[in-house]
Length: 233
Image (cartoon, rainbow, N blue to C red; front, side, top):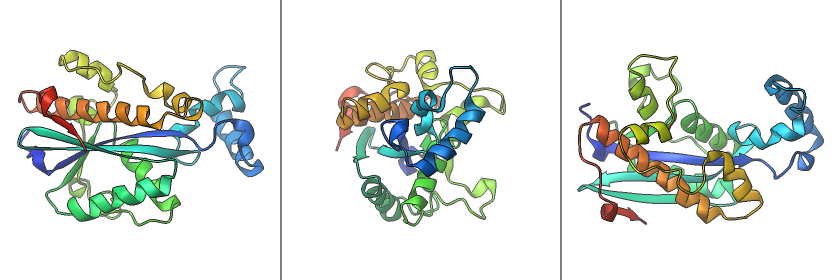
């Protein structure tokens, strides 16, 4: 894979439901979530209240609390996290990074399952917060080969579009340290709403970005970045 890693901004996001509990939704959103949960329900006890813990994966019913990014230069990985209780604030900072430093044709975004989740989720929440989508995220009117997005899950598929492979499994296959050694995605909402520990979530998000970078290097047949060369700014 002949892609210069210096041109890539690696990222991962963490999301939560728009509020802590179903009961806190406005009447308008309760009705809309009830309709959504009807389609999601698979068991008799799958009530809207119970299913609301999954609301964070839907950009219409959730919000972003952290975007962690990483870039590789001189065999060092530099990580930075934008995290806040104020979604517009963190998105503004992320958009500024993209506009000022990742605005050239050679620049690319990369994540794991990011084409289906992270990239569209960020773009939608940018619009909800009345911000302008940066060019690197805006795929409107672009042909597929013009979209500057990479996805380590898609790269692993090799055309097998029935296949879903988790980042955790791929790190195990390639003997990369797991990013799931503290919490995993299913626990983020609980850590945020009940423990109020957004910094712990940011550290977890940075581990996911690190894992994506290391996986990409494995795809290129290159050595992993050593732990002492991973810098959090």
